[in-house]
Image 1 (spheres, rainbow, N blue to C red):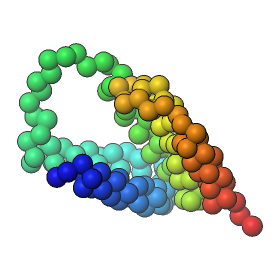
Image 2 (cartoon, one colour):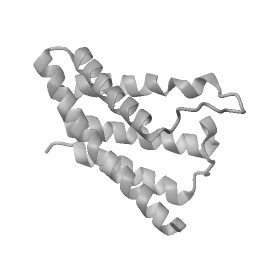
Image 3 (cartoon, rainbow, N blue to C red):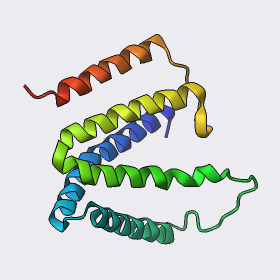
Length: 152
């Protein structure tokens, strides 16, 4: 697969993943409301997700052989803290604040974070300097979020 088609595939895959975020937020938010426990709903989400991930790991055979010649920094294992915070917060906030509002501000946070991570090449990411084009795009995204969540 050449780089053009690889890029199209990756962009499409991430678009589908992004489409799932509000669906997950709505499902888990409603589950938390019905159970009267956002924490229990979050725990159920992680159990289901963990079971699927473990099943795929075992069936695919990927990652079953740990062969690292270089040490892995401890902080690389801390991503679960951020996903847990996200799931807890979206499960608790979305039913009260609205799926669109909650996800829009999550998106805005992601854009700000990715810009900083890319600009400085933090956490092992490729470094991409902030350009004028990217800055203008971010400004439009900020405006877009506020226009999308504004209620007339």
